[in-house]
Length: 495
Ligand code: NAD
Image (cartoon, rainbow, N blue to C red; front, side):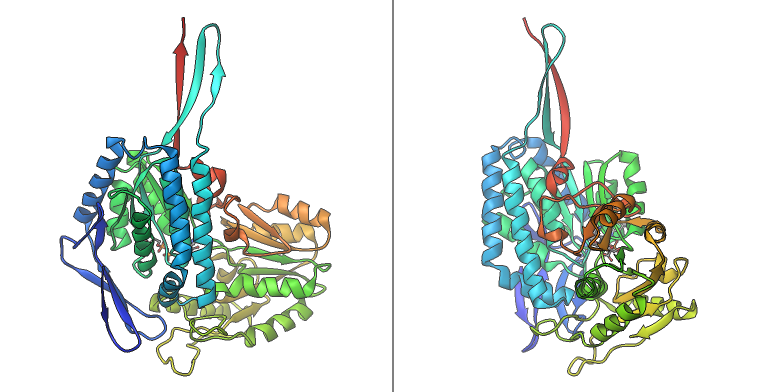
């Protein structure tokens, strides 16, 4: 990695591919420059790789895995690397958070939180690495059976830009804990924290060739990881559209796949809820990271008896949110990630207007923030009178746009909540334990929050993943470890 000063304000980082512990230029010699969503300045330059670069990294990961030294190493060895990584991440948290803040444009304190959550992930999987074991099963006569859990092999890791560090950690940490090797393709918009993490892993003692990074276009590098017969598993987080493509392209080699995909989560407020808490939960639920969160509570279902009062407070709260420079401690919302995402959100706001939803705050256009004329800011936007058939109620917008709907009773709330191709998360706000449990049972989603929202990332022991078209498989928790293991049955005849 090299660093050079671009201007008095920004340092441009440069990364080549990281293969077998060495930085290597892409065979094409081409690079890609990521610009800041806040200032438009160049931020980071990465290799724009092709299939040959991907194949080179895959071959290294395959060779290192097949040699067996790493995959058969003592669990204590892998534990110590993971534990040391957690410590080093905490030590370097400010520098990593600054980098994430620049590339994602999420407020700095929330970036620090992502970094600390990542350290916890490494601690958690350090613990699990010491507890990978099988069973002994007594069979008929003199036959004993045993199951052995082995690493799945070479893992292709493909990640998005919205939480670039914790989401890659959800995959790298269990891959190391189980003895896999990997090739990682981070998002081209937020590559740096992945490089920082893999550099930390090396500092913590991870031998070369186990965690390799190849950057570039998803349709080129990502697809090569998916199609290569030398890769055993793909761990992907990203959009449902790309997830479906991965599933199709992984079929010829029958790869193991885990897919963490999009969402359109219902956040449901019952009339007996603690309203100040519920309103805060609705605001945080949609506007965290400028709405660019897979689990965003983008459909707010409010009981008809309290709808007007709740909406009035939501509008008031939305209009006072601090929008601006993510490095400023008072900022709650920064700009969106890039021009394409900005336009995509604009088109959804326009679609809401065209379909007859009632725009009650925010709207189309760039929100101007003094000092940042090029900042891709979007005002917090709320639509009332949304019906479940509208585009803004069905499609993932991935921006600060909230669709408000009403319901008469529990049955209707449940029907609206489940009227979606997605099933990632849901929020329920009520003091009635019966209502809470009935709704939690009825909603088809991988995570349910009752009287809270967005707390998943804080608890590595709770598995995370989607029902329906929000994904396949689970990350973190014991289930997240199992995704990186193959079970072998051994039958032994004695005597
Ligand atoms: P994306 O699907 O566009 O890209 C994700 C990654 O896939 C990137 O690294 C990209 O380069 C790569 N990619 C693109 N095309 C590919 C292809 N054909 N083959 C292989 N890889 C390819 O998603 P994004 O815009 O980076 O992220 C936003 C999406 O991620 C949203 O839909 C969001 O809901 C989802 N997401 C889901 C979770 C979850 O845990 N369920 C978490 C965060 C984000």
